[in-house]
Amino acid sequence: MGIKSRKFWVTILGIVAIVIVTLAYNGDDISGIVSSIAGIVGAYVIGQGYADGQAVKGGVNKEN
Image (cartoon, rainbow, N blue to C red; front, side):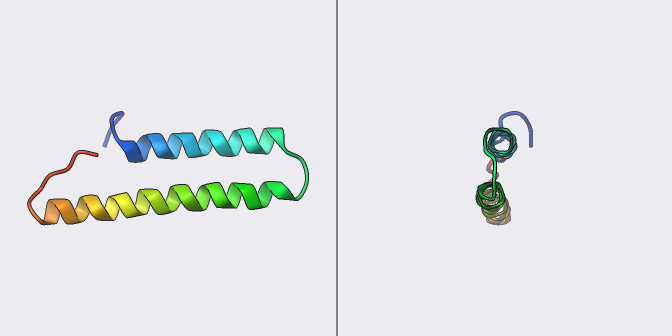
């Protein structure tokens, strides 16, 4: 894992999006929006981690 990792960049962009939403919006919508962003980012990272693990397990070493 490193700077070239898509999982890393998706996580960073998710954090930035959460910070922007938190600063830009007021009211009750914030928790729903933040939860949605966190859920999507989390699902992507977990899914890619699983896919990467299966690729390594199958003998194909995938860097991203």
